[in-house]
Image (tube, rainbow, N blue to C red; front, side, top):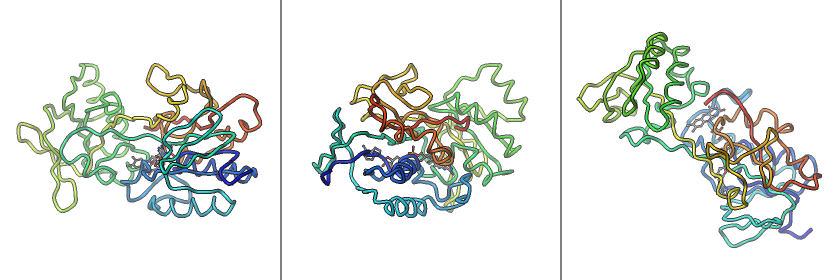
Length: 307
Ligand SMILES: Cc1cc2nc3c(=O)[nH]c(=O)nc-3n(C[C@H](O)[C@H](O)[C@H](O)COP(=O)(O)OP(=O)(O)OC[C@H]3O[C@@H](n4cnc5c(N)ncnc54)[C@H](O)[C@@H]3O)c2cc1C
């Protein structure tokens, strides 16, 4: 094998890609991992719910994870993959082309946030989206939920969050709640603050409240929003993978797509670090894919009920 030929090229060095590379390298595959640098939880100061890593800054995981795979001879390349040709040839932004028997696409997703002043600035600190990741840190505090880009998800969050705090206000913002939805919220003890949200009120590096367009400020120390989950699936689409009715690359339960297999947040929105690492062997169909006659792209998809 020449220097630019691999058994598996993994695109993306998030939790999914790094864990897959670890398993593949220990199975004595020649593996390269390519990463473009912007991991999804980059805005968070701490990660939670990951056994033995609870409370760890993500930056520490991004130091120790690569160190572990480098110990097994994995080649880690900092660059962006621009295209994958069937066969496979993986093209990098710097002009290099890597040949590989299999590709594992673990490129994750990006969170599209509502265009409300303050939301982007406070994202990952006191603007949150996942109660399982950060609900405990804001337990018993005055919490808000703003419905915007993903109103169904926001409603779901509002119905879950009383588990963490009884002081909960739902901001429908631009969403029209049905009478049934209002009833559900009331039954869970959630107050509804009608009217469009103008901005988040921030003082001294901390969220203080949610300001409505009528000037009323509802004091809150954390808010949850439902982002739009946008898969980073351009490489899979470029390979001709089928898309399902929800706009996600279609996979079977093992993560196989019409052209291949897939992994991580790129193929499903229910993406947590904990889930990405939980069972790389079951989801690591890369290992099986290498010995299969068919199968092209290998990536992983996992399921959880968490947002
Ligand atoms: C604010 C926030 C806080 C979170 N907190 C927690 C938590 O506490 N606990 C928890 O379990 N989960 C948490 N999550 C969820 C967690 O971040 C995701 O589950 C996890 O990042 C998904 O891993 P992944 O490997 O699929 O994707 P990512 O971590 O996003 O990794 C994908 C990688 O692929 C790379 N990439 C994409 N396209 C290309 C390309 N073309 N070429 C090269 N590289 C590419 C990206 O640069 C990135 O490094 C949080 C998410 C957010 C947004």
